[in-house]
Amino acid sequence: MRLIFMSGISEDGLLKLIYCCGVLEERVAEAYRHMAERAGDLILRAVLGYVADDSRKHADALRNMAAALGAGAPDPEECRRVAGELWAITMRGVERELAQTSRLSREDLASIIESLADLESAVMEEYLMMLQAEAMKMLLEDRPEANCLKKIIEWIAEDEKRHAQILEALKSR
Ligand SMILES: [Fe+2]
Image (cartoon, rainbow, N blue to C red; front, side, top):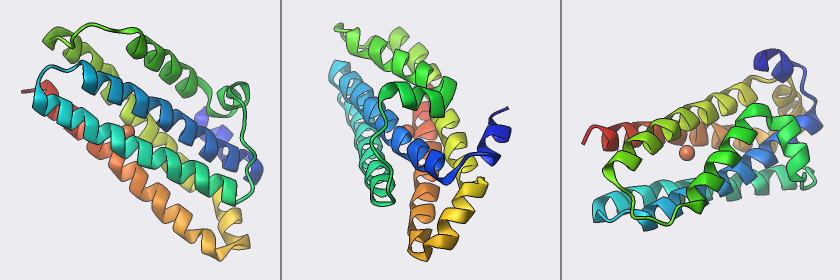
């Protein structure tokens, strides 16, 4: 269903989606940072901090690139419309994490990691679909310099794959 929508997305819609994914990454970064602070184990803290920094880097890159290509800052309601279910699920998950104040227990960790790993692969899929969208080809045809944007989104998708791997490794410790 998502693929059908993606193939019909306009350039303007694509830029909005890129911007909204930046906002999403920003919130995800906050959740990872918060989780790192809740972790008692120093290694766990360092690993979660690494993923938080990575997500923050993605957030800045996506928003800056979308804005440079002419996207206005969409409000959350608009983002929910363009980014769909992924947006709503992620935002709820972030709120849940930010509401936690207790020390991160091993049991907590296992269940959180499971949902985060799902999220990371869903986000990765989102980027890969974005890259295949007809609107992306049009965007690049009009502005060859935007080819770097495509490269960067590819790299971000690769990072998401790495995040999923890191989380998987943490789970099986
Ligand atoms: Fe990620």
